[in-house]
Length: 230
Image (cartoon, rainbow, N blue to C red; front, side, top):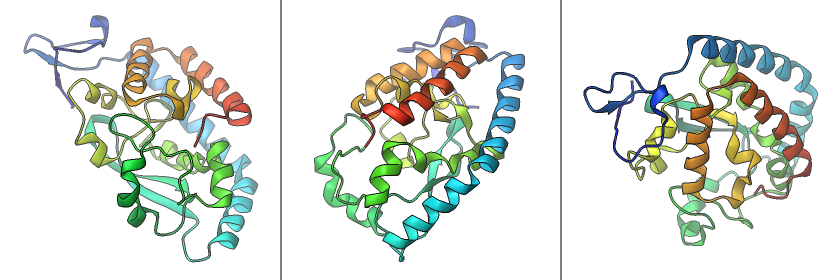
């Protein structure tokens, strides 16, 4: 279990347990976790079946534009309690995108331990569309079904990003990462890293299944109308 010093934290006291030793443990109601996992399994399973035609069409377009790379992009991410897992996405960049990143780091348009660039030259034509609509994230339903992610939660960071985390930032790693969250419905790529952490902690404090449903429904609206993703 991931434990953090209690200083400089914002997790509500009612969600803490075993603080006598001066360390932080997140505490979530068993009923909430059971319903949340059940909802993850049902929704992700239905989503994969219903969206199968979308998967096929997007896969074909990705291959037509760039035959050299794979349809899916897999990447090691950091999950709950800093456990590593492989996250899946539709490939939205050129096949050698990771090799080109080093030369773009000085053009980062967000703050903190993240990299965001509005006009990233590595993004393909189909990539721009599926990123804007968040279609590139749909393969993460597989991660949800496997139990590595949840439908709602903090976005899973990269290992190199976590290396720059303070203990305060690591609070977002106390729960299972999600496909969507408060960051997505409150501004997405226009929000800086510190604000994203604040929103993640706000979500953790809610600990409410109805709040999860609200975020999921709001995400559908964002996918259709948002101009903030890049």
